[in-house]
Image (tube, one colour):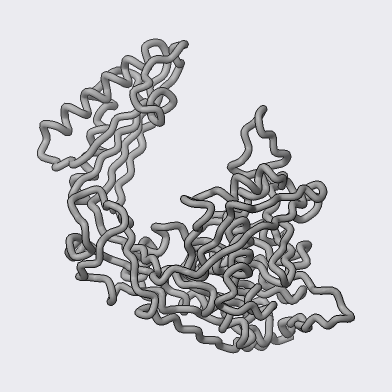
Length: 474
């Protein structure tokens, strides 16, 4: 039998009733994040909204390549599994879902969600898609200056010639608020600024004007703190013996309780793993922020420099003091382009003299790559555990019993990259004794650079469809 999606009645506060608080949880902080913390939030978080933030800088460009190979793909690979896990509890509790798992193909992602809803017997699900972030037609071949160097002589988009495969602008919260105003239960987007996914439901619920900069800045702070999920509750923060975090294997993801004036508290589901303190909040507040007094988003220029954190109770921190000013006149767009191929090959050595044998093996491969006509444009040779991170460190107090050589190189073609891996594999019989555990990988390198576009050129589009459940035969 089917069931109808539950929609929580939205009430306007009156003088006789206290100002309501909206509860927003983060179900994912990157594309491959865990699923079970999102289920925990959906079941026990008493949420109004559950947001999945799953797009890193290169994710859309890689998704565009998938879509070029198959027009029915281009969305997050874990979309179906996540929706299978959370749609039913969200329906039961009246929780609406917002996600950028649409990546390069929100419409195809919406079809997947609709099919999951039919399998679960959820009737009347309203799924919205937000598109318009794809600005390849506006960018390709232009003389727009690049904001960050692509690692070779290029200063404008046109310098990248025909290697450009994608260009996606960071949209703001407005198209998501439009979807929510049309009654969407699930909103699927492509590239939208991470905090905007969380700001949108607050603008919708509280009726915040699109030019009330202090309020938009506070909502942006909510989104910025939640967007990386487990980072706020102790993941990545943890440093055993220095910054201990309990039960990381069951790390709970965060949620925020937000009032109409933009004041908010961040917390997590009681009993979940991890820890949420002023220290974890401080680290996340500063994460990926170049200037805390001028955090630029499509919606507002937020000022975090006077943020005040109050430790209310265990795993509960109140955040105040956020303000903001007018949004930028431009939108950032990430441009993805083909930049050759990357090859890696690894081999292990163990026992007495392991380091010397690994270094000897590295010299052999280096000489081979230097003399062969492989057109290797860049290469590095690392002993993992000795100098792979701290380049040139080299010396160790104690000779390790085992070491792994990694060779990484950039080439112009796929065949040349494969040959790099073959040179590492050939060490089995043509290098020092005892080499074992060879692995090799070759992949196309999609690099990212950025440009700025006048915001009036970017035209977001919101569409909502009603999904009927499949008829279930007794």
